[in-house]
Image (cartoon, rainbow, N blue to C red; front, top):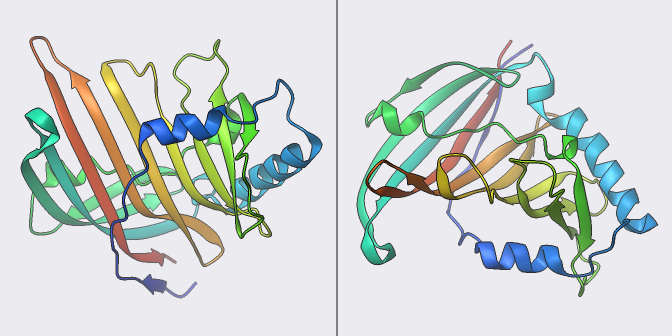
Length: 225
């Protein structure tokens, strides 16, 4: 197969707050999803499994720029490392990375694989004031017996069922007081890849906590032969 690529200019949007994510997930909640909600969820699940390169043995390269922020007191940015990097994947396996000018440690903080949320057990909900536009938002509330699963919000294309945005909050991630991940997704060459990924966390230490935010913008995607 010939190499194919998609070039994009990236602009970071404002990340939705955890409060907004949980608020949306709390509306219109039912014990069993209604038939319309189940229809969209089932089709989104089937589409995600078919378009997620992590489910295949396809080899691909993602070029991205990552900002690693250390957050100080009051929520201000205390310091920032920046790195451009090429990531070489086969399916969901990171085979290697080639960091450019900058710190490789920062590049390794960027996880560009899309979570398999449809393998989890969720209580689903719809946004109460759905306008019927192109995007359909589905709230995800994790089963209380499933330790480690995130809550969150999924936005899919109403017609194609392709994932467009994903916002995840992990309420009980080991070693963290807070941990969230957010994705903006894009279709390319028959697959869905991350366009932007944000991770915000408070990592627990022995004597103190580390607050950080990692922002990654994808600039190039190539399917390798």
